[in-house]
Length: 92
Image 1 (tube, rainbow, N blue to C red):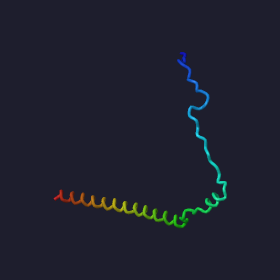
Image 2 (tube, rainbow, N blue to C red; image 1 turned 45 degrees about the horizontal axis):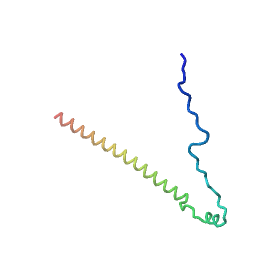
Image 3 (cartoon, one colour; image 1 turned 180 degrees about the vertical axis):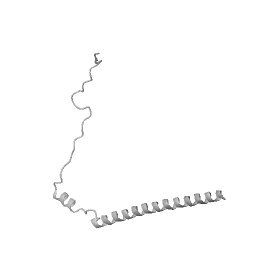
Image 4 (cartoon, rainbow, N blue to C red; image 1 turned 30 degrees about the vertical axis):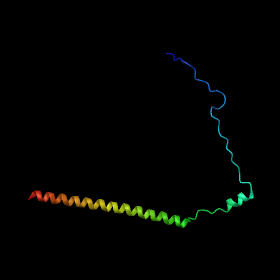
């Protein structure tokens, strides 16, 4: 069994269909620009503040997990007591 190509693949024309935009970037060359860049303030958050924020988020997450597990246990105990009360009322 032979496979024949019906038509050859179309050839791309030389050159790009869409021209790329040229990047016009330059380094800060004037002394004024360099001084202005160096004079900018840095973000004000210190490492200790970031640690404190992460610690608070972890405490909230652990507290939420603990609260959810307590809620589940309470609801299971409540449903179990209802089932026992229902079974006891049927026995009478």
